[in-house]
Image (tube, rainbow, N blue to C red):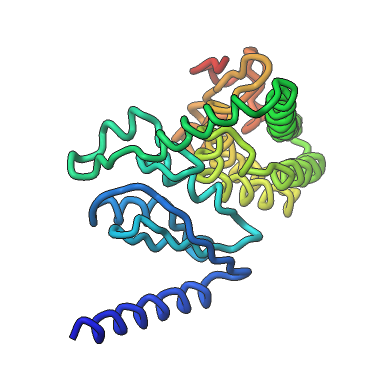
Length: 291
């Protein structure tokens, strides 16, 4: 009976993996250890790691092993494990923030073996690795961060230029600049972003891409301004965590969006309304300063 049960479980697992492969393009499958205790852990780990048609996570509470099946063009193991870590669960590559772990239900608070493993490895490496090698790693990490910060700055800079084109009621320039925003967005490697920025990027990326694409595909200034409303909302969420080199002002026009009001971002505190241009150039106010 037990043998039959094991065979059925194996068949079920095989079918599950096969279905995952069928639904996910460019499928890559890897097995990693993720720490947890129970079925509640399983639900959280799998939910936080899964992305529709992009990534599928199957976690076994007995072995603590997770099977990751993902589209290798759109994501990678690190991105999946980062999301899982932010939900409270350690792997041997990424540790959950202590504050998140502390909020897990009592039955989900597993022994944090990964933390011990990482600490032990660090101590062992400290004994055998030269200071020069440590400095090289530090420099490489800093360079990678600076590169991604620079790419995000390009995203924000092209957004501000697009906003200025709308202020001037220049639909042709706005369409061209929206293409530049789209290029800048595509250049960002989300796997190299800081974890807090990475999570916002994952949430807002679709809206940012769609907004830039929609604006680029028309020179109708009215339509462009309509698309600019949700686009600016997503950009605000991103700049709020990624930061910009100088203060950024969130500004609000109560007349835009059919009287519902709409926001935009500016490097200047002075109001230059992208939704009305010269018709009502100074309509609006600064509602938040991001530093």
